[in-house]
Image (cartoon, rainbow, N blue to C red; front, top):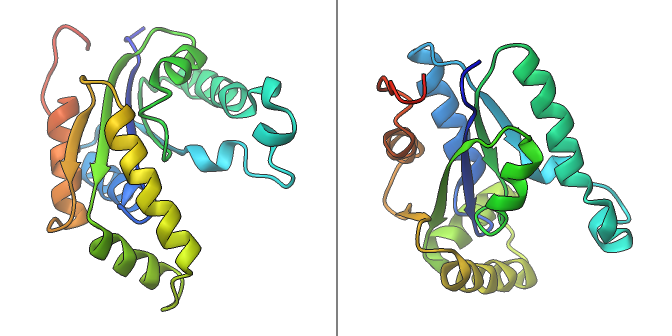
Amino acid sequence: MLRSEVLFIGGRSGVGKSTAAEALHDLLVAADVRHVVIEGDALDLAHPAPHVEHPEAHLAERNLATMWARYRELGHHRLVYTNTSSVLLQDVLAAAMGDEPLVTAVLLRAGDAATADRLRRRSGGRLPVAQSEHSTRTAGRLDTAVRGDVARVDTDDLTPEDVARRLASLTGWLSPRPDVD
């Protein structure tokens, strides 16, 4: 069985994580590269928030473990995982996968103007001040807290396809990797 590989894509709200993952998916499909895309936000999205009400439950990690095991049974070994703080939790998330994956972690970054514009488009033209301020605080926290081995990609002037090509380059998934495959 091939060794698992995971690409963790993190970054503030509005930086383009989901859009970049979709563009990477399209790029990998075009090259016929087997892979899985999981939106980490959906693994514990509930009200009340499980991580607040029951932090000991580790619901996102448990759900990832279950989902990844099913994909592995089907022969997949490459995972694209998006979540704001995935780049801070890469060790915990990789451990949840259960098979010591080769990890690539990327922090997507963008300035306040670019993210505000993206968030405005996503919300239909209106951007709540609290959402904008939260995104800015998160950007600062992520940029200072990520480890040195986390790649940083500035997305301000890049198309989603440009970001996807950079992500593909960082993982090497479009090139043969004899040490992994």
